[in-house]
Image (cartoon, rainbow, N blue to C red; front, side, top):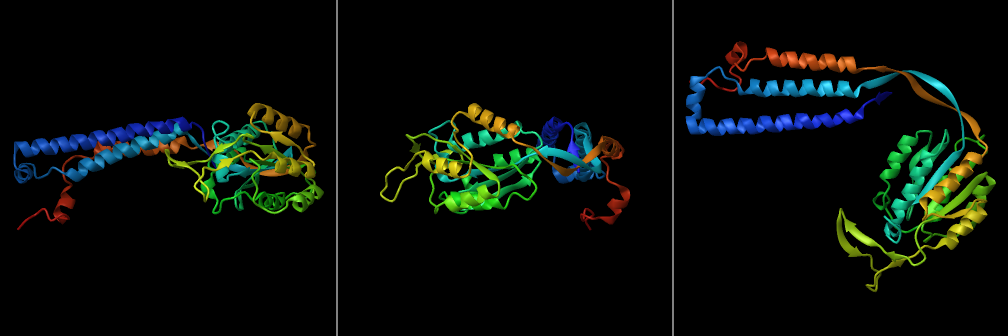
Length: 346
């Protein structure tokens, strides 16, 4: 396992890109001037030992040397010891609706962005709790298995979008069924499922599924995002706006928050329904609720005793820079004798 201590130094690679660009421009400028000065074949005869390959090799050595020194500044660290850590926490699974209706912008910046915001800020407030993420539309898919890696959870969450699911619609029941399989610790007494959606549902009845979750000790909380007034669904390709989604009659589809379904699920799941348009208020409630829950002790393994590895890259960088100094622009005699590029003409 490794860590990168100072990732900001990766921006220095821009300097290497500038170096290569400058070298290319100077090389093209030299070629242009040489053509103006004399015939290229004549120039080759006047300087038979000049090597274009060596000049390219030298700039590559400089680039490799500088790259190694930049990585040394980043200071990679290797974990040398795996230790078991005891933690206390609860299991939380977030079920995120990524159907097309979640792209509606009746709340800023959009329903989906608001839901992601709530999840991300909740994760920031968690302690040693374990997190899992499910995404769903016409079908439900596991985005992240239950884990203590909160950084990974936020990274996967950022990439969640309607493009990740193969079929559109909103089948909440499939998300509820998938959530049942997420809780892998039978001894965990506090399990929470937090479902974020605009409430539009095209699936079957969820009553029996929610009852099953409740019997297994899983409390279901639902968060509604959107407005009762609703709004159209924008169709985009990249950053280009193509229009609004229309039904079969050619009329613009207006999607509205349908919180009755979400309230029903929360009631049957022995949780609570929250109106999620106020991010701070929603996150504060969830955080307080989770903090007050009884924590279960569990064990997890992680790497420790990370050791610096920058010295290897410093040595490698210096080696490449020394090789650059030792390389001359002249052709190497033994290579020249091989006549690899058919330079000797009969």
